[in-house]
Image 1 (cartoon, rainbow, N blue to C red):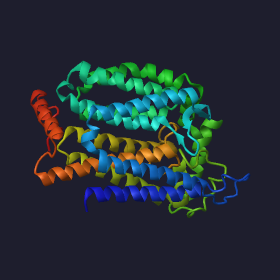
Image 2: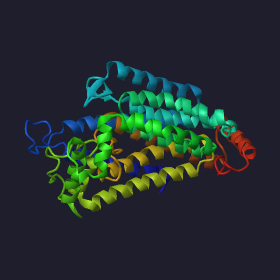
Image 3: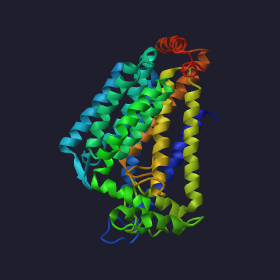
Image 4: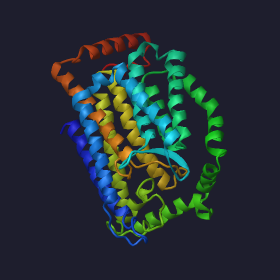
Length: 401
């Protein structure tokens, strides 16, 4: 079975399961009372978003391809669209629960923070593959890309979406390391800035500070910040080993907040039990394994960085969400990839899968050609090999298979 087939089978299972769980989790939400009546309004919107994601994935895999994603024009277009949409959401965005994160487009809502995750992957892969001979220098390899990341992350943070900033920061750091950048100067900068960032972004903000304090002892804490965790624990505990059965959970009936988005994993554990929750985690591990295998079989640094970035976004966000719901880390808004209700989120996740498919397709083409297939890719590989001899082994395993 090819990696591409395994990739899309995994994505199809996750998306199909997500649709089923969204229907179950949103039962009764359109009525005046939480009666558990099934409604399909959320299902149609989620299916529409998935269709958009599939269209984007097909366009990337079969038309755009990795060689076009390597170009400056496509990268600049993605960054420009992200920055403009973030500025637009700050100006005319829709506010929900005190956060202005969505642009109302009629039947759908656009969440620019999800586009920012995609742009970070595309821009980092483009930059480090374009200047591989400079990644070991402090200015070009550390400070310059960090300033660019800071601009996008700052705009996302202005929408009060700290969770997306954390995801972007982890992905950026992983890609920085994988590109062969000297990590000591970067880690020193992070260590110096972390206390200031932590105080400014988390501790000085009342509800975020309360969430961290509640996380330390959720069962004995009162107020809305501990309510999420308590209800999540009740739902998961009620599911036991095998669960109550699809549609039979009761915690979703007005008890678990954000039951169809950030806390949908609690509904899964209640209705499918610990076995279902563990099985879902295993499926994400399969996705991560496929993504890393696609990266490992690529002969080109740019493709490897794309594959590693896409895999890191999905993997970190999936396990980050599950860790939040199970009380292992402080509560933070973070959707479960392919599962949680949310148009932009699920569409971008499928686009990430499309990028992985494009990389796998290019890898297969190279194997058939007996080498690197396009002139652009040949030039990138030659440049990368020159870098390897210059950088004394630190990136020796990055540019060649």
